[in-house]
Length: 300
Image 1 (cartoon, one colour):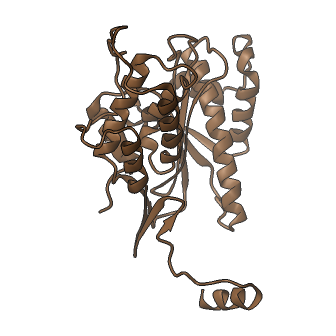
Image 2: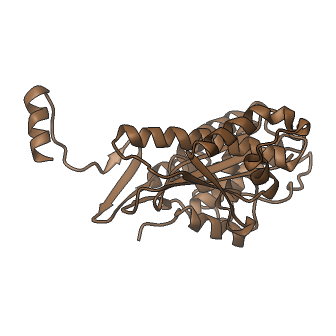
Image 3: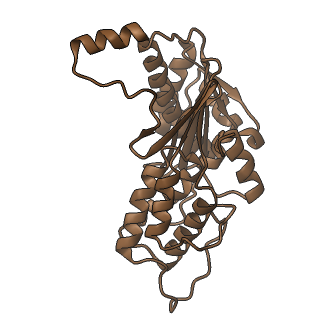
């Protein structure tokens, strides 16, 4: 490393600032066996923007039921403030995938937030206040990729579109995650799960190729875990059915990569499906359990 730095200095005008400890608002804490990325100061600045410095904290960023709000009740935030906060929260998700689902849902109403949306945003901010020091660890471990893919069928009460969620680990480190409302309405849970699986496969293959560019080849199929039995059977079935014509491209795409041994599709119980936290609101106990599986927490 010393020789590399010396060579760079001989060719470029540069300064050696030693180990990075801050980058674009992300604090980097390093120990011999891991790095810890957090945005505590940034999270607190969002709380100040919302003027919630003295509010009580929450244990869960989401609710399972729509909160009851009277039409006469004033909104918790103005429309402009709502948009500013949501924009800031989207950057906070860089190290906080535990709030990715809640931010995704609230982002869909930035054009015209209703009173209950501002109430849900306040609940999310109260959760962030109590977990401002949480972050994402990057630990020293093996370099095996594994992906968890899930979907919540017809979760949007207005459009009945499903929500896809998947996350990828490199060893014990979470390196990628996505929460996205699907672009079309799925006619079955199998269809929605398959669309999520196809998106997860695309992202996993990209990460695999990126690792290869860094001369870290992945010599075995990448394990992708899915908790929908019908989806797994469909992916491994060589017979094409007319009833699956509407997802033919996704089916053939996933199946081709299974045959090429790029990926390996494995079943997992719903209880252990980590991507569940990215697709729906959860009870507090289960939310905390899956948050720990995502490795999100305080630096220890």
